[in-house]
Structures are given as structure tokens and as C-alpha cells.
Amino acid sequence: MNFFIAALGVLGVASSGPLIAATLGATSASALAIAFWRNAIGAAVMATPTLIREPRQFGHVSRREFRWSLLAAVALALHFACFITSLQLTSVAAATALVCLQSAWIAVFQLFRGTRHRWQVLAGLGIAFGGVVAITGFDMGSSPSALLGDLLAIAGGALAGLYTLAGGKARQSMTTGTYTTLCYGMCAAVVALLALFTNQRLTGFEAAGWLGIVAITVCAQLVGHTAFNHLLAKMSPLLVSMIILLEIPGAALLAAVFLQETLPAGTYAGLGLILLGLAVVVLGQKRGAAARRSRAGSAGRGEPPSDQSLAELGTD
Image (cartoon, rainbow, N blue to C red):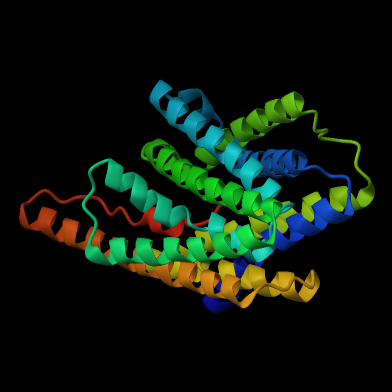
């Protein structure tokens, strides 16, 4: 059963890029409209059970929790703006792989905060960013728009890393339902403001546009990430994190089959380097966390597990 749920989760998150690209290319739906409705619908879905079971939770949100949730929401809104726009400029495979650098960016941010990573993490970062150089190098020679799309996807990955770190701070004392409702709701509000300033409409699309938005929300947001949240209670965070990495080849395969997307051999090599590098980063972070808990336990200062962020490799 867990294998079926894992396959469903990978298919859900891997379908995000191809579905967005198809919706943008075949309908009048805008990038920010997709981001807005995806988060607005997600907030409504997550709010319903919380309002039924624990309606007072929203009235007990502290200022600290609200600030971290707001930072996460702003980062998530900008992430979606960058990633979805990148799918209009570069290939689905390249955009998905580059935005999935989220875990690598988290490790980089932790370096600046004074965290000492194991050598495996540093080696994985080098391999992953080597894949970035390969992809952007080939796109630089093909078209300026593809290179811009790559840069937007890279920025989207960095923003996703910031979203995960800020969300981790907020969720130290908030329930999942309360946090996701607040974060998705504020993210939708920020996206609506961006749409207002950039003159992108959020309504008035043809039926196919609405169908695409619903498909993206259901497949990626509700089915994909719900499946992985379920697996976190059944499997180790490390295994779930490694499974999520299958989003990269999954998106490339779906784009090749349904969008007839073909890429240079060098780009596929870059995708492989990113996948390998991220796997090494995840394994290195897991071992580093285990070593820190072991040292803390021997000193009589038991620390709570910090593996949750390993599973939060994707937001798409």
C-alpha cells in the first residue's frame, strides 16, 4: 500500500510542471492566477477540518508565529511567481530540476548561519550546482529566454528553501492545519497583490483554463503533498525525501510523453548531476543530524529530531 501511495505522490508532484506548462500554453490563464487559485483552494481545503475540530486555534496564533508564517507566505508567493513564469521560458525538465534545488539552498543558508555540514553535504552541493552550470550553459547557447527561465527557476528554488526554513520556525508551536491554512491564505493574498501591480487577471478564463487550474491544485497540491505527508507517518523522513527526488526524472518523462519536449544530451546530463547531488546532500544531512543527536544524548541533553525538513524538498 505504501508503494502505491508513494507512486501516487511522485506522479502528483511530477505532474505540476507539465500541467502548468500545458495550461499556460493552451489557455488564457496567467502564471499568477495559477498560483493564486492553487493556494486559495489549498487554504480552504486545509481550513475546513481545523475549523471543525479546533476552531479556536486561529485565535491563539502568537506574534512570533504570525511573523514566521508571513515570511514563509511571502517566500512561497515569490517562489510560485518565479517557477511558474520560468515554465513559459525554459523546458519543463530544466525548470523542475532547478527549482528542486530547494534542499541544496537550505544547506547553503545553514552554512551562512554557522552550521557545519559533513563533507558529504558539501560534495553533494558541488555536484548539484555542477548540474546547474551544465543546464544553464546549454540554455545560454540556445536562447536568452531559456537562460532567463533557468535563472527564475533557480531563484524559485532558493525562495522555496527560505519558505521551508521559515515554516519550520512557525511549525515548532503550530499545528499543521493552522499553519498551512494561514500560510496558504496569506500567500494567496500576496499573489493577488502581485497580480494587481502586474495587471494579470485572476478570473475570466475559458473552461479549459479553469480545468487546468483545478487539475494542478488537485494533482500537485492535494494528492502529491498529501501522499508524502501520509508517508512521513509510515516511513523514515530520509526515505520519503529520496522518493520525492523522483519528481525530477518524473517531470522530464511526463513532459517528453505529453508535451513532446526534447532536450540536448548535455541538459539530461545536468539533470542527472542535480539528482545525484541532491541525493548526496539529503544523505549527508541525515547522517549529520544523527551524529548531532548522538553527541547531545551522550551529554545528557537529548535534542528533538530535526528530520522533518528533509521531507520538504518540493513545493510544486
